[in-house]
Image 1 (tube, rainbow, N blue to C red):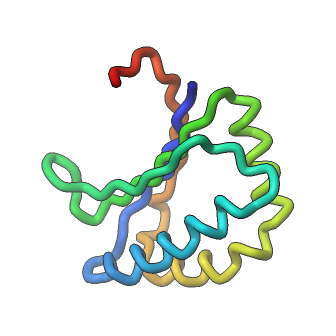
Image 2: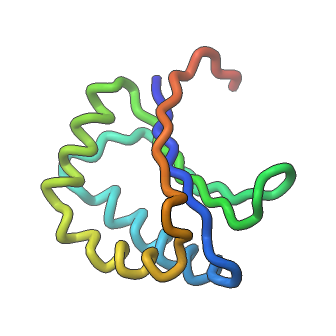
Length: 108
């Protein structure tokens, strides 16, 4: 199992605006034909991390599922132009990054 984590920092005072945009985009992403994430969640910095930091995690069964999901998003890129416009005004330039983690052990 793999976790694809997209992190970025927000400009001061824009958290509520960013949260609205990200919550709206969640349903758009999940409705894309070919999206294979098993679970997604939105995290924000709290203790030991900047409060301006946002992280969106998507869980995938395999790297192949992750790659095909990204391909499906690219094929439907026009759907996300509004989200990009909204985040452009709240995101700190140069801060976005993707990190991919392999799940080694999971407790239930």
